[in-house]
Amino acid sequence: MGVTPGDRRELYIGLMSGTSLDGVDAVLADLADPLPRVLAHAHRPFGSDLRLQLLALCTEASDEIDRAGRAAQSLARQYAECVAEVLRLAGRDPAEVRALGAHGQTIRHRPEAGYTLQLNAPALLAELTGIDVVADFRSRDVAAGGQGAPLVPAFHAAAFAAAGARAVVNIGGISNVSYLPGGEQPVLGFDCGPGNVFLDAWANRHRNVPFDRNGDFAAAGRVDAALLERLLAEPYLDQAPPKSTGRELFSPAWLAQALGEVALAPQDVQRTLTEFTARCIGDAIARWCAPARDVVVCGGGSHNVTLMAALADAVGPRPLQTSSAFGIEPEQVEALAFAWLARRCLRRETGSLAAVTGARGPRVLGAVYPR
Ligand SMILES: Nc1ncnc2c1ncn2[C@@H]1O[C@H](COP(=O)(O)OP(=O)(O)O)[C@@H](O)[C@H]1O
Ligand SMILES: [Mg+2]
Image (cartoon, rainbow, N blue to C red; front, top):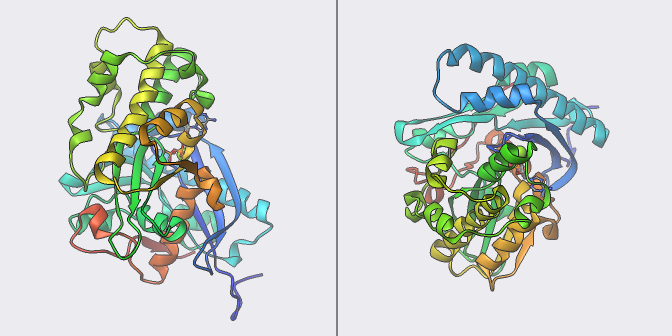
């Protein structure tokens, strides 16, 4: 089977591995119609070796080039296995897929210095999958003077547009919001601040688990008002968009500094960090997306019940729903966005929004590695 002339289907794969470093999500989608249709989803968690290698590469250290080279190969092999899995689940053949969009793993994001680096091995990925690969989505926007992030707002607008104003929040390692004003006004979007990074780090340190499943650990604690106030004093939160951030700012050192010498129970810290994460998002919506009538949430953080309850308070009285209500599961949205961006790249359509990233104009994003 292959792509035959007259075939109306447009099958694309999107691969996303975000700052949470939890693993890779792949979706296979039919993008022939304006509303994308997910045919299958696969997730492969990173093994702890790869996770630690990638995490280490997020911080400046020696021997980075060789370590990055090796980690990129492992990453591409994980991606290829996830692609094979999603094709198997859908009963499809690589030849039927027009392209796959592979975001790569962000290990450095310094748009102010002119670069952002998503670790990837797209040539190896094309070799292993037999599918055209689109990679390196962010650097063209940075070259055009933009933040290179977030890139999902255009897709959020395509998938979740409403008659009235709406905010779409993605809670990955970092959280970002897209503001869809409705009508002809431009879509806005920016990184709010931390998403799951600190929730994962604290749960890992005190519970030896990768994340606080359902927010149960946080639910056992109480918010410490003084700590919450110190966390919320971070200047990035007050900075007006366009803005983007990452693990460079919201690092273990940042958390250690904010915690200081506090003698709180670990569950109280977990609860306070959860409240802080919700407030970063809620405050950002109140300040820069005030007319939004409702809020749609996607990303893995939407499975954290304690976080979602805190977020419902923080954005209230606006109703809060997850993307499931619109037919796309929360853990599929980002991967689907990169399938959608890959299609735009092949069609030489722009993928970025200048009002979001601050670039001189919208650009065609990505580099193509033919199969
Ligand atoms: N059941 C759950 N309970 C609490 N948190 C969850 C759950 N499932 C996923 N998560 C959170 O979601 C994260 C992964 O989210 P994801 O959207 O993949 O982020 P990223 O794009 O940064 O990789 C995990 O690290 C974890 O913090
Ligand atoms: Mg992830």
